[in-house]
Image (cartoon, rainbow, N blue to C red; front, side):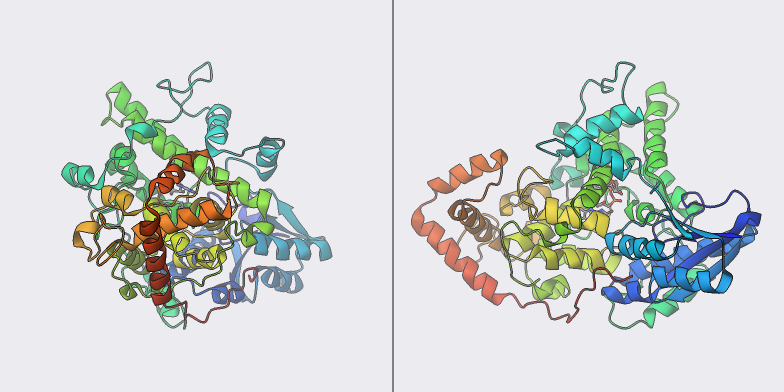
Length: 522
Ligand code: FAD
C-alpha cells in the first residue's frame, strides 16, 4: 500500500496529487500544531485551512478513500508517525509551498527513502523553468516574464505570438480614481458561503485558541472546491468586466469592490490558476461573439496579468532568492512594527485605520491598501521589513510565505534593493487623495506638508526621499523626477518636515504583541 500526503497548500481533490483509485492506497492529512502556533494567525485563516482540510477528508471518504487524519507537531512529524503506524511502501508528497516546510520534509526524505517528493503542479511555471528564465538576466522584470507566459501558455496571443488587441499591457487605460469609481457605482457583494456542521465545529475550535488575531465572526470564504468554483463564477459574471479601470481605487468601508477575492481559495489549492484564466478568457470571448455580456479587454488583460503574471512571478522569485530573502533590508530600517497594525484605533489617519480594520475584520484588503497604504506607511515610518512581512503573513487569509514575502520585502518596501520592483512604492498624501475617499473623513489635511493638521504622509514622504538622497541609495530611474523635485524644496521646509517626522515616529507605540515569530515551524 502507498500513501499520498496532502498539504495545506493543495486542499482539493482536483489540485492535489492523488491515486487514480482509492484501492491504490491511503491519503494522509496532517494538522500541524507547530504551524498553528508559529504566528498569531488571523482566525479566518485558521478556519479556512482547517475547514477546507476537513471538507476534503469528508469528500475523499465519500469517494471510498481511506484517510489518515492526524494532529502532529509538524507536517514532517505527521508523516513520520504515519510511516511508523501504517508502514506504507512509499509516501508521495507534492513539493511544499513554503521554505520551512520544504526543508523539514526534505530532511525527512533524506533519512527515510520511502518519502518521495513530486514537483509542485499547482502553478503554471515550475521552479526550474523560472530559474532558467532568470539565469543571465540583469533585470528580472515582471513585464518580461509576463509576455513569455502569454506566449508559452497561449493565453491572449494570436497565431503569430503577438498580443490580442496589439498591446501586452493595457494598464494605461486603467487606474481610475476613487471619485470615478463612486460615480460608476459598486457591484453586489461577492457570494458568501453559509457554514455547515464541519465549519461550525472548526469555528468553535478556533474560537477557543488563545492568542490569535481577529475574530471568526463573519467568516464566509469558500472552503470546498464547489464553493470556490461558485466564487469564481460569481466574479466572472459580476465583477470581471469592471475589474481593470477600478482595480486601484479605494473607498472607505468598501472591501472587495471589483476584485475577485479568489486569492485565499487559490493559495490553499481549491482553484488552479489555469482554470481561472481560462474562465475569464471564455467570458471575454462570449462577449466578443455576442453570446454573453461584454468584458472589455483592458479588464480581462489586467486580471489575467495578475493571475498568470504576478502570482507566478513572485513564486519564482521566492524560490530563487530564499532563504536569504527574509533578511533583505536595503534601507537598513530597524524600527519595530507600530502597534497600530494590531490596534487600528491607535491612529487618526483614516486610510491606515480603515485598512487595518478591514484586515482585522476580513483577513483581506486589496492590493492598493496593501501596497500604497500599509507598506507605504510602514516604509515611511522606517519599519523593519521583516517585522512587517511577519505581520502580513499572519494577518491575511491568503498569505503564505511564498507570496507575502516577495510582495512585502520586494514590492512593498524595496527591502530587496530592486530585485523585484523597479522603484520603491512610496507616496505622499496626493496619491491617496486621488485613489481613495479617505481624506474627506480624516482629521489630517492632505494638502498641508507641515504644521497643524498636516498629513503625516507628506512630511514622512519628503523626509524619506531626503534620506534616500543623503544615503546615496539606488532607487531606480523611475524615482529620478521626484528626487529632482526634492532639490527644489526650501531647506527650511525640509528641516521642518524632518522635525515633524521625528515627533511622529516618537509618538508611535511599538509592537506589543509579544510574538516571536517561528518562521520555519511547521
Ligand atoms: P485580485 O485583485 O482580484 O487579483 C486576482 C488574483 O491575482 C489574486 O487573487 C492573486 O491570486 C493574483 N495576484 C494579484 N497580484 C498579485 C501579486 N502581487 N502577487 C501574487 N498574486 C497576485 N497575495 C496573496 O495571495 N497572498 C499574500 O499574502 C499577498 N500579500 C501581498 C502583500 C503586499 C504588500 C502586496 C502589495 C500584495 C500582496 N498580495 C498577496 C497580492 C495581492 O494584493 C493579492 O493577491 C490580492 O489583493 C488578493 O485579492 P483578490 O483575490 O481580490 O485579487
